[in-house]
Image (tube, rainbow, N blue to C red; front, side, top):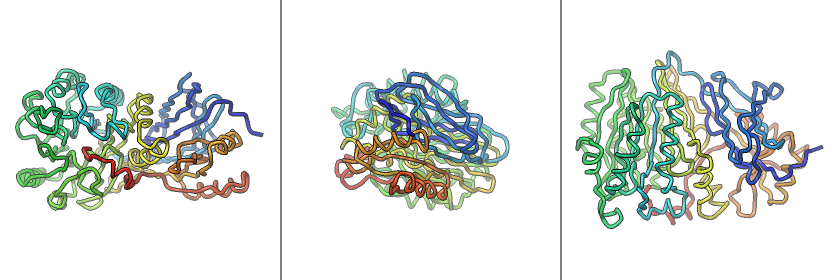
Length: 483
């Protein structure tokens, strides 16, 4: 017998962050506030109940005290209604002592209340009116996680207007206090004619308002690690470019570095499809860095999404960072160890604003489904570990789901209580709802669950690996491409 659902439905349940010792699971219960409860344990028969909050509609469950490289089973619950029973594996520990942690805040688009006509704001949930609020909440979150320094790889302002640079100088940077913060420009930070009224000050804003040198690329050393910040932005152009002077500086700096670990930070991505006006000369960059295996990762923004690709030197992760100002309204933390590092993306702890951004996506539920997969990516696009051997470990989840009409979906969610449990999300088809009945770290467990569901409910469920994809053509046609 299943329990009645009443008005509570688990929606948008996501295992967003998976670290070595913690995980963050988020979900919503629209119009039905209740407790934030997670059952978690090393097996489905050993689940410990943890009640983390009460009377919430947006649920944020951070589970701590986990062991590295360990599989955990979990199930969320609100008002007696359970989400799907699932499992995930924590990241392995890189090895050696933890040395320091750094926070990454990308594409903050501080606006001073002035937009730039960016289609992101009109069609894709860019929350300019909350830009500073989201960034400062992310900063508070990162401080609680014990970071030692911070980086902002571009698009700090929305349109490089004097008012926006003043807001960064007077309201944003002082909030960092004694936390060192290093920045490099993005395309929006070099707007002049493209700013509203053609009043942008472009790169001049960096040295006039932010006290930076006229060379907007630099090297930062911290605990025998080197961070190289590049300037890929071009005045009034959304594409990126690395000039010959910077390429020479990059090569010389890497040669002088010896074998110390290096992280590269720049605004424009240098791998993958050019949907949002990426770097125009990525080949020169990759050629310059190919001979340096001590490069740990390449970190960039611009695309407003979570994605991990690989590039030169061989098997180096090229990590695209979430935007603070737009779904998933995120930031990232890199924890550096003697023998490697971990990378984790987090949603800013304002789930109401995260939801507000997602709800503003064009094409309603269909657009939300597509854009969520694009911007949030898969769990392995948001979390990874590089270990002593230079190996990259990325978690994976396999989702078991069916697509049903709304009334059928609600009936199935009720029948699935309390086991296997269920959660809903919009499907890519406009008249359908995606009902998730399980999400597992193992393909075998996912396919076993599919067979069980076929026997128990007569369902023909599907199994797919979670993960993002690029925007489909009908989204690209709307795109103004400002990034």
